Image (tube, rainbow, N blue to C red; front, side):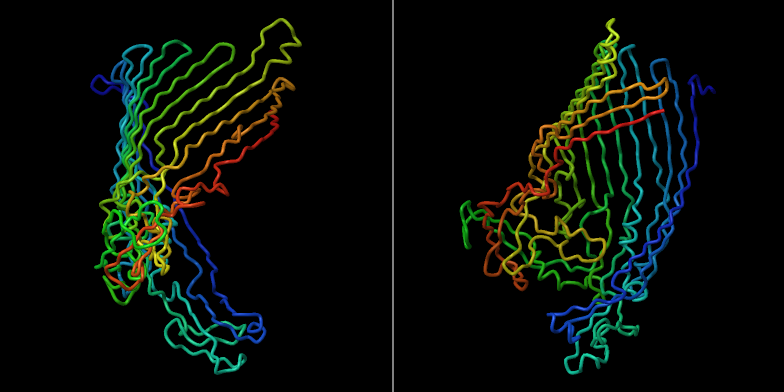
Length: 559
């Protein structure tokens, strides 16, 4: 222990972390080719409809070193105040991916080395039975290797990923097929069941995926403050708050750098309840034309040589605020209980998830994990029979009964549009992205223009668990524990509703002469309510219940 200007410095620590991760991914894929036949007769004759085959390399290997440096100290300012100080710097070093000379950005990864993360914590005890705690810190996330791989594996080079698609030449007999290249990646096919061996048949994909040059590693600012008051040796009340702000969050939807912004508009007219056909009258709103049939033909913002240039971006922000109260009570004769209530809000902004890649500024919405109210109750009773009866002690002692109960608000989901009559998706530019790191936008569907993103909530989730256990002492240091547990004891129907799972979230069926036709720049779509049996808002119980009722028994031997 050393002294610094009258302060007592305790437990000063400095350290270094090093980790080296090597990932060897093998994806065999379609390297042996796949034949497709229209019917059994064609199969018997060897007259296939088409043949496809992959080439390149099935391996994707890379090594990621990780370095971390930290220092921390505990400072006793006074008998009532203690400070905890810390500073950390850590970073990963991802390899620069293989570059496609036709698009140099495929060969870069923006490693970040200046990731200073300070932390500060304190504990102040103005009275013997009162403690005030708080802290603030900066924390950087670790980039998952699968995000790196998915974002750099499709670089357009045939040596890394390539494909061939061929058709049957009806002018030749099945055993006399002569493979011929019509265009790179396409041609007349081989004789069934052989595969293609000539490299000229294979072409790299016109779609690219990469890490956006402005990509930033996700980070979190976190702070907390709580007051703990002990009213008696067995009763403690804690009141506190927590705030976190995450930034540079990776978008769960795909962003196409090569997609030309749309020039047309779509006017949505919300039909009144009970309407079953278009046209109709009602409130209207106008937005950009995100008809997937039109957007699919608008590649070329950066280069006409490529199709989609799918970039991994990190524009999102998440702000979480909570207030909580916790009461702990340790009663006599082996009974303990805990009651905790939390009120919180979790809001996402700026493109954590998006449906319109050309405007990320209006995406202020509840995050998918937002649950406003949580009430938790836990209790445990351990039997301690102190009577004079030895038989009573043997029969009643060493029993433990416990329960955990949780009553939670529902999670949010978005209201969506059905596909247009033509089958084209509306109001979702992210739906068009098909490169490897896409998440297909909001469940791969267009969001309803009449209700904000994730503004609807599913039903709450109630869970009650119960357990009974008995300890038997075999010898001095040997015990056998029998336990019976019941989860979801009263078999409450808890519909798991989050991001549309467990509920019909299609609010409208778009209709109209030019709605989603894939050709008209300025469209009008009449939004007919998706009502009736099984319509909008209907809970879907099959496969979407949050846990069945489960009984579980166990035996444990300790020695």
